[in-house]
Image (cartoon, rainbow, N blue to C red; front, top):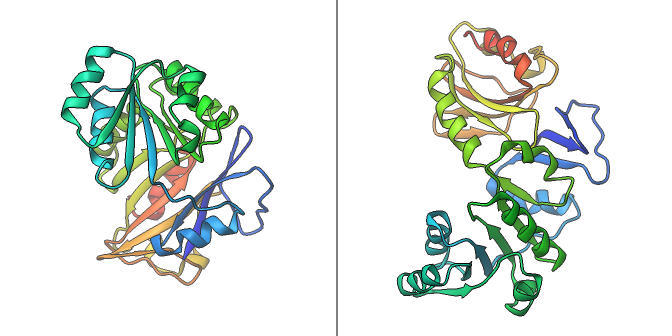
Amino acid sequence: PMRIVAIQRKQQTLIPRGNTTLLPEDRIFVISDPDFIPSVVSLTGLADHRIDDIAILGGGLIGQFVAQELSSQMRVRLIESREDRSRQIADQLANVLVIQGDGTDYDLLAVEGLADMDAFIAVTGNDEVNIISTLVAKHLEVPRAIALVNNVDYMPITPAIGLDSVLSKQLLTVNAVQRYVRHQRIASIASLPGLDVEAVEYIAHGGSKITQKPLISIRLPRDSIIGAVVHGDSVIIPHGETLIHPGDKAVVFARHYVHEEVRKIFGG
């Protein structure tokens, strides 16, 4: 019910093989049945934190949208530096507690109870503000902290400085464009922030190598792994005996230089 598809070890990205051993402090990327996620988390020795209280830094369009979407599910605080914008948001979002102030001010965040939050999201238009405020949140032991980072050059260093997760509008845009410019046998593609890996969804062609044998007998290129298979309405976490049928979609995690070889196996 789960499959490890990539490992980040310090600044190195690994595609796991059968004999790969996980080390302390490795960051793993897992595909799993949603019902099995708590078990996956427990295997890592981490606690699965329930999110009831969340703080959002940034009252722009993204911050307001996230606050509005989450306010029906949890208690939301939104921090905005501009006084006029703070008043405007407070009038529009009745279920959100709006705080006017500097999101990088340690004392402000501490006084406003950031240490009691279950999660913190920084989505201002300034990468440095987002990173610094998220590090402050981590220092205050907020269990989950996420920063919006527009400069993709920052992505590889974010795990090293202690950020849990980063989002990139630029990468999201690139991923959307790539879906249209890639080969017709590729359904979609996504870059993974901070990793030297792409997740590509291939469509299996009738008569291709991938449809002729169980996966245990298919020789995939090194630095590639099939993370999931979509068969009709079912999503399958594959194992050695899994057989991919024509028309099935398979999500392959691989380094960019092996995708051409993978595409040929799928009949592209």
